[in-house]
Image (cartoon, rainbow over all chains, first blue to last red; front, side):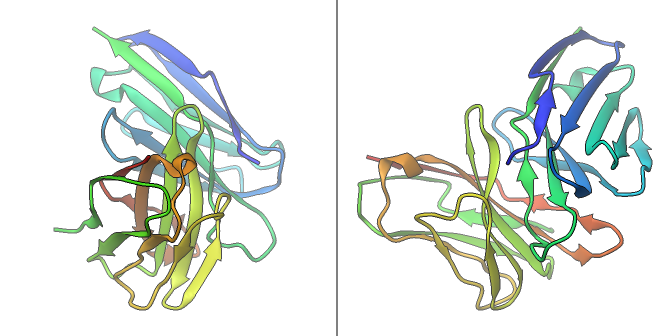
Length: 113
Length: 115
């Protein structure tokens, strides 16, 4: 079952902040975030392992609450280059399917000048 | 240059005509995976491989086959394509670091149209 992302779409002006959420009904081992620009391949942003850690680089950070099976991606002071579709991917805890990765349906982020 | 190369980039074919989409990576990655992308459905994993001769099903494996005879190559085979397999396909690869997980590099994609 795919994780659920919210919102489905968000429109910002440069400099504004945004939060994208990813929620799963299953216990998670890790959460992966990717960004895909129109007509291009997805690009890896960051990975969070269970343990409730928070990560970030530049003005993009993420958190992972393993008890709630939820992750959030935070985009601060957005830039035009942040526009694209953001996907979360999840790997379930336990089992033997170590390489199985399930993605959400995506969140379309549009940043205007 | 580190890259994942898919061929062909575009293909229009007919129902039932066997086809193979090749994927090759030059980064010595153990892990490789195939995804299909359809509007509103995001990326869905078809098959993945943890290493040579080790493959496993993703969420949507029906109608597809894969093989991993060499570390660098992971072809996707559609033995009897049908119109519902019309989609954008991505191949990806990664090292397997248990501490850091999978950080995938994606190919540029293959757009398949099956008439």
